[in-house]
Amino acid sequence: MFLSELGSGWHDARIKPDIVHLDSASAGRSSNAVIEAISGQLWEESKRGSYAAMAAAEEDLAHGSRELAGLIGHQPDELVYRDTGRAALRALLGVANLPMSSTIWVARNEFGPNLVEFERRGYAVHTLPQVDVYGHVDTDALENMLQFEQPEFIHVCQIGSASGVVQPVAEIVRVAHAADVPVVVDMAQSVGHVPTVTGADVVYGTSRKWLTGPRGVGFAAVRPDSRLHVDIADMAAGASSGFIAGRLGLGVAVAELVGMDPAGVFDELAAIGRAMRERLTGIAGWEVLEPVDEPSALITLAPPPGFEAADVDAVAVHLREAGLLVTAGGAERAPLMLTNSVLRLSPHLDATREDLDRLAAELRTTGC
Ligand SMILES: *Cc1c(COP(=O)(O)O)cnc(C)c1O
Image 1: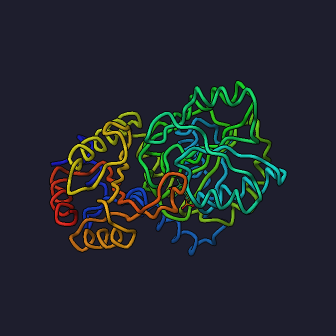
Image 2: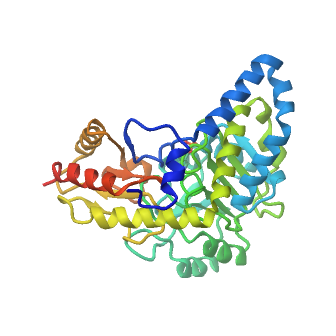
C-alpha cells in the first residue's frame, strides 16, 4: 500500500523498477514521459541536425524554463543551465571572481565537494552556529554575528547530501539581507523536495535527484538585484552546446510536479519521511539523525557503535542484494557534521508500507 495518495499515479507514470528504489537523493526515477521527451529530441537531432532541432524545440524549452523558474521563485531570464549542480557552482565562482581573501559562511550540513571548491580558490570558510544537535542554523546568533562581521556571502545547502535537515533559508536570507550580505543556496537536494522560493540572491541545483529529470543537467538562477555581482550571460556561456534533450526532459519533469501541485507533493514527501523515521527508530542500534518530523524524505541512519565506514558500505551492499537500493554516504559528504559513514534512504512518492517493513526487517539482521 502506498504511503501517499499521490503514490500510485507517480508509480504508474514510470516503468516498474527491479528494486525498491530508496535513492532519490542520488538520482530519482524519471517518468516515461520524461524519457520520451529526451529520446524524441535525440531522434529529431539526428533527423534535422542538432541546432535545427533545438530551434524547433524553442517553445518547449521556454515552457520548461518558466516552470522551473516558478518553482524556485525566479524569472525565466534569470536561469542558466550547466551540466551539473557542481558545474553551476563552478561557473558562479568563476564569474563572481572574488578576492582570494574572501570569507564564506556555511552551515553545518555543507556538502564536502562544495568546501573543496571554496578551499581551492583560497576562500576562508567559517561554520555558522547551530541551534540544535541536528545542525539547523541559529538565525538569532547569525543576526548578531552579522552586526560585527560580514562575509562575501553566506552559502547554504537547503538540504545537504548526508542529512535530511532542512535549513531555514528564508529566515537566513532575511537576516543576511538586513546586513546587506548575499546568500547563495545549494538546492541540489531540495528542489522538487521542499518549498524552494527563498528570496536568495543566487540558487543552483540539479535535475536528476528529487525532480526526477535526467542526469547531466544542472541550473543556476541569479536575482536581478543580487548583492553578489555575477553576469548571468557570462555564466551561461556555452550552454547552447549542452544537453538540450536533457533540458527538455527536465522541463517535462518539472511540469509533472507542477501539475501535481508542488505544495501537496512536499507535504506528502515530508509525511513519508516521518513515517520512515518512526518505523526505523530504535532498530538494532541504528540511529535516526534527523528529528522524526523534519519535513523532508531524506533519512539518515548512523550505524551502531563499532561500525566503520566499510561496515556501512557492506550493509548498503547487503540491502541492495536484498532488493533495496540505498546509499552508504561517507563522512566526506558532510565533513563539518559527520565523522563516520551513514546509511541514506531517500524514498519518493511511491514508497509503500511493505518497503518500510522489508527495510526494517533487513536492518534488524545487520545491527547489534
Ligand atoms: C548532488 C549534490 C550536489 C551536486 O550536484 P551534481 O549535479 O551532482 O553536481 C551539490 N550539493 C548537494 C547537497 C548535493 O547533494
